Image (tube, rainbow, N blue to C red):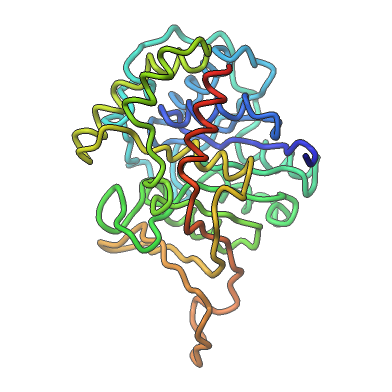
Length: 320
């Protein structure tokens, strides 16, 4: 086994974020050196509260939490919040007691820049929400893209319909301008879209197995999963939930669980396709000079070993 990978999780908890964070803390391949928070499933203030709460549940209050942006990169404040998926509190309407901990003074972007400078080439960002904090870090420090080891992000709907509307996936739709900055920044980027995560399903039977286990994290998650299962049943007519965030986290833990293609990704920032991720496989050399020219390539996930991902999620949560 190689050396332990340092990761920062940029997160908007969120039920599947909670699962991903607890999974990360149960993964010996990675060391979580911080959580940064962003709007998405909930507003940023609540995301911070939930991140602090989850670290208390896990007994890991040594991990710092840096609060992120409360608005989009273009200073937009009309945010799309998915409380109808995750509950008004983001954690299945359990109304847990407020956490005792507080976020650090540094902003999420400043924390990201500092850690990338402190450990150049050694920090992976696992981005589970809109990409505002990452874009702010890129704007704050031109060296960030080269200092960061990798950005593994949950975002996009490559060659499939979105989950906000037919065109857009939720995280990209949350801040399309920020996403376009990140996709074209030149960092080593691995994008996990819903074309892949919709193949990874935690079934009702899996949830029953988790509830029968003695795993501390499994028991906690079973408390909060009801809302998430109900939403998936109503929206997709499925007896299970998609493991978007845990799949993305495991892509950082073990990239061999997925296969990838490489090309340029741009994000549509206006009109009815706002938030659309467009992939250029670079198979054709175009004569015209366009906004696609001279852009760096990124890796986009195309297949996933779904049974292996679910097995890892189950084992690690049940053995917590």
